[in-house]
Picture 1 (cartoon, helix red, strand yellow):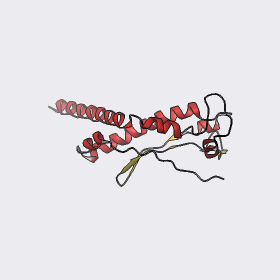
Picture 2: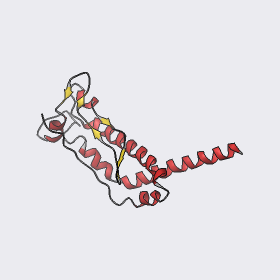
Picture 3: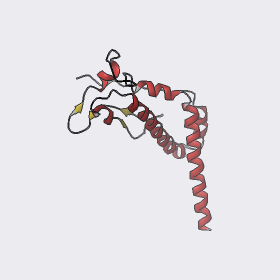
Picture 4: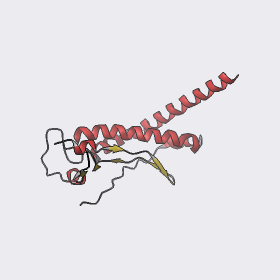
Length: 151
């Protein structure tokens, strides 16, 4: 069986996000995790359009896992493979992803996860910053409303 290969799309230069971090990690980190999960869902949605499809087992095995923090890194994982559609494991996810010589139906292809992830990198910093700002703004309004309700 092929060993899982981990691909990482690292986004540098998140100046706005770093500025937002000045608000306190306890405030920003949950928002960052929420936003990364939503970005992961967007990437998975596009990957499912591109994933090779015959019976649907590979497509239905796609998952966005809960975002997590390790040290100074906040991350989300998007995976295909593993158990799906019953008890049969989907062992061919990596083979299908990496072998660009396989023939697929129109619109389906190898690199079905890597390409959408790389495409999502364009504008990622701005989307991330905007989404985090929106979440923090909503939370601040909710807290202010709670304070007003207590008066």
